[in-house]
Image (cartoon, rainbow, N blue to C red; front, side, top):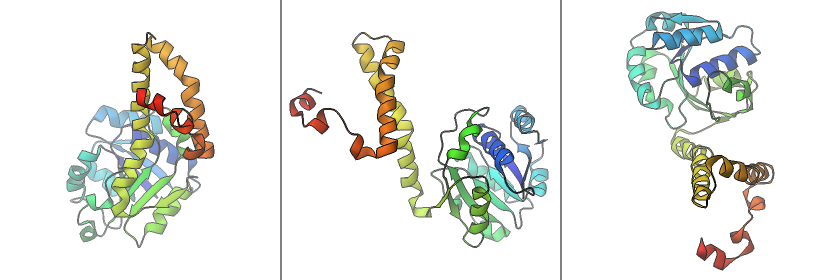
Length: 243
């Protein structure tokens, strides 16, 4: 399977590195990157030791699987260009958590196969995130007849795979936001409340670290119900009223 990437940001580079490092199939190979920013494509190609594509047509011709790893808002416009190129019998995938494969509208008319393939992982850095990507569960949604091929492709990278329904994508992504982005937001609120009590930012962060880290570890090991502490768990009604 020859794999090309449109979009050379954190997700594209991290996924490319993950495939190169973890694929158990010798015929699977990342061939290169195309990006509207030639410097980004060049950096991605250098990091992965693959090819920088300056021509979208050439990447489409060379690829058997194409990952569209751009921002969610840009996927449909990339598809408008991509569907005019030779994509017959090719797998076209994006990595959005909230969008479905229907973003590749009318893909059946072009005899290609569309998929949403989402790693449930916070990709924060193109230089290091790939090292832990093997821990992530991938969700897959898309064209049914070849779904097993895409599923096996991900499993051969060492990742567990969950097939998800199109109608569940938004709720699934909201769950991921609660577990990731909202946790960051709550941590920031807690730090700033500590600062209102006279702590510096670094002191607040240091003070909260054991509380937050141990609590999260407990949730991950024992579940949310068994991990609850504090005034609600103790039924301290007056304390809750003060809060």
